[in-house]
Image (cartoon, rainbow, N blue to C red):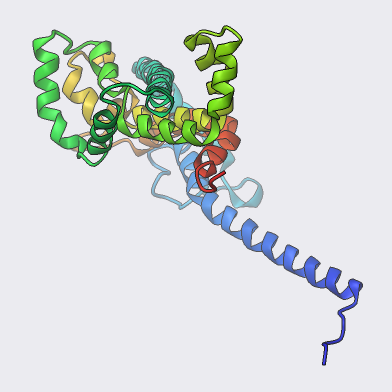
Length: 293
């Protein structure tokens, strides 16, 4: 015996309630996620006296019982007056250069491993896979010795060159190109007279654009948050990136937490902006290999 059909109006009401419930849950989770960022921003506007006086806004006689006149930008003024802007520009340069060069090198290497047939291709792929499981901390000492012997210590090249071709990126692009770029399309481009460089830039990169955006963001974040390598490779204070400059704000006997919070806000703002610009490509790149086809 078949069950009675559910009226269309009832199905619409049920679907509407489910949609509103889902939106309410997501909105609640979004608010909970944003609370630490709101606290961080408000804390960066507090003076040293008000930092521990209240969890969020300092109390006062203003609207909502908040002392709006006690919020100040002095922490940001003091931050950049002490030369923090130089460290910020250093981080922007290091992260941007590493992201662009790393994307080009890894995508070209992945293209070669995916579409070219050459002697040693199998061992090269095995070497890439072996390097992925190798802990990066094991390479600190030999990497330092190598940079010392070739004269790249305390140089920008010594910081950037060792990380422009990570094995993870090479294998990631190799997999993306294998799935997204048909061999027939490459052969057609060759028959039309395109060189391998033209095929790489005009055919391959546009087809893996989501992966390019995702890897750009991953590489930028990795260098932006890099804390150990700059302290090992760079000795000059004016070459240190933002991550090291923030750590140096902590004093031995006293720490200006308002200043530290302002530095943290400055450090996460470019990363948040970059993610907002590349979030579509980032999500597409992460899910591009989930479905084979």
